[in-house]
Image 1 (cartoon, rainbow, N blue to C red):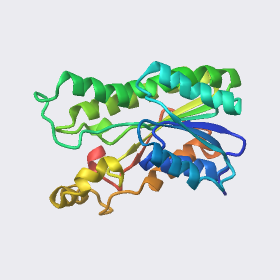
Image 2 (tube, rainbow, N blue to C red):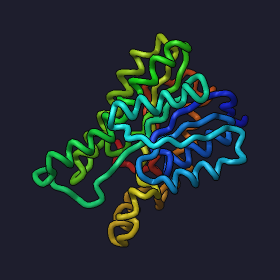
Image 3 (tube, helix red, strand yellow):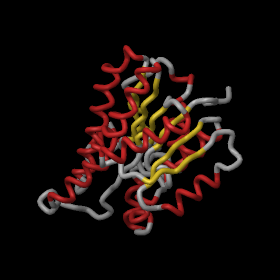
Length: 255
C-alpha cells in the first residue's frame, strides 16, 4: 500500500537539512504541500525546494526561528495563507552540543538556548497550529525527540532534559487533543548521519564507541527516520496517539 498525503498541508520545522529535509522530500513525494522552516541555511533550504520540483506536492521554505513566538506564528500563518489549511505538523528543529559539557560547566546561556530551541521551539509551533486543527476536527502532530530524552545523556544533560520534555509534552497533549481528533506522537532517533552528528563521525574513536552500542552496527540515515514520520502522518496510524517510536538500530540503552 502506497502512502498518500494528497491534498494535505504540512509544516516541518528545521527542514533544510538532515531528518527535516528527508521528511520534506518524502511528504512532497506523497502529494503533500509542505511549508518548512530554516534558520540560516538559505542555500540548503533552496536545494530542498529544488529537489522537490517534480514532486506532486508544492514546497515552500520560510526563514523562522521557532524559539521565538512571533516567528512560529509567522510560519504557521504562511502555511494557512498559502494553502488554506494545516493537517500535519512535524516539530523537528533542534540543536545539540557537539563537545561534552559537564553540568558544572554548562552556562546559563547554553542551558537556555538548548531548551529554547529543542523544547520551547516545539511548544511555539504547536501553540499556533492547534487552533487550525481544532477547527478542522483533525490533525497530526509529530515531534522529534531522541533516545537521550528517554535514558538521559551524560555530558549532554541539557539536551537530554529538553528531549525528555518533548516526550512529556507529547503524552500530555495526546490526551488533551484526542477529543478533537488530533493525534500527537513522537519519534526518538538514536545516532543518525546528520550535520549534528558530524563532530562524532569525524572522530574515529568516538564513532567506533557510538557504533558499538548499536546492534545493527551503523548509524541511521535521515530517510530511515523520515519514513516512520510519514507513517505517523498517514492513514496507516489512525489509532495511535501518545506513542514514542524508537528508531535507533536496536540501541539497548534507550530502555
